[in-house]
Amino acid sequence: MTAPWIRAQVRQLLAQRGHAWLLHGPSGLGQYGLALALARAWLCDHPTPDGACGHCDSCHQIDVRSHTDLAVLMPETVMLELGWPLGEKAQSDLDEKKRKPSREIRVDAMRDALEFAQRTSGRGRGKVVLVYPAERMNQVTANALLKTLEEPPGDMRFVLATEAAHQLLPTIRSRCLGHALAWPATGEAVAWLEEQGVPAAAAAGLLRAAGDRPEDALRLHAAGMDARTWSQWPKALVRGDTAPLADWSPAQLVEALQKLCHDLLAVQSGAAPRFFAAADLPAAGSVPALTSWWRSLAETSRTVDHPFNAGLMLEDLVARARSALNSTSP
Image 1 (cartoon, one colour):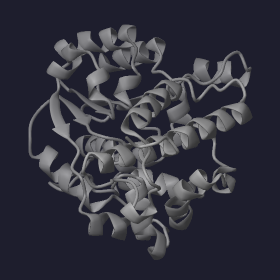
Image 2 (tube, one colour):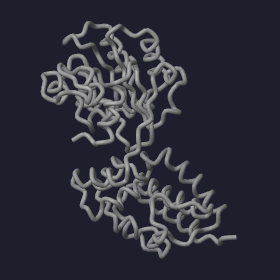
Image 3 (spheres, rainbow, N blue to C red):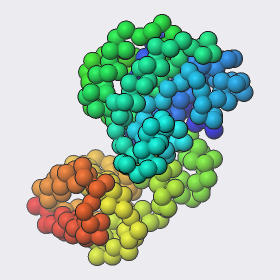
Image 4 (tube, rainbow, N blue to C red):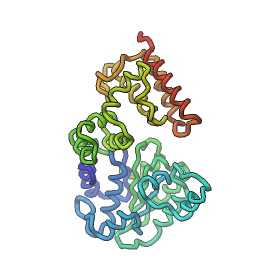
């Protein structure tokens, strides 16, 4: 079921004209859902001002990931996660274990999409290229897309969705109409999380843990996080109790530590914490130590998906965290 804040944005964007949209904002606000909803509405046989009808043959083809007039450009890892079929050669390479799924949007996939853009629409409603996450295009891939954005075929529409618009080429951004994803009201987001199966007692806490980003909160729930563990682990860490962190991957721990460091620095600056209740935060370390820790976490985050030894990385992350948290405040 489409979230209510996404439905409102679909209505808003369908009322405007443009051949290329760039949907941007922080993670967890629904970029992919909004992009797909726009593509569905553009291709729908019986569209309404609120979006696609949901019942026609075009909508069914999108549901089963086989629409002839929709090209989806994603990293192979994301395609597999979201249930989109890979190209024949790419699937063959993976089946034969010639390589691992790509985490970038490959240039050969982009070339296939641009060749698709030159074809005649199969259903007469035009064609759509959906790119997500658009920041996963490398420079070669982005330049290939740029040429078609500059001179699009008459019945071609593009929707790019990103969580890091600043990483896109300025020329890509300038050729798209930009739309910043709307933040849902807290009550609206909590109600949606409960509809997705998050227990009522945990929804508000997980939403806070996700920085008020509902889809990120849902991912935390799917990963086994509960609101009680989230509220208790920072003080447990200071005491030397790492049991709440035992099942976390290095990437999950780095993200959690970045949130903790952010909130401690915010409190030191007189601002309210964002990811934790103030009562759940341990006594803050010194600002220089916290700042140095923040830089260290940022550097680690760049390579955390490929740790040489996950166990040693977890030990090192915990040790650095305790050192910063136990530093003497000036």
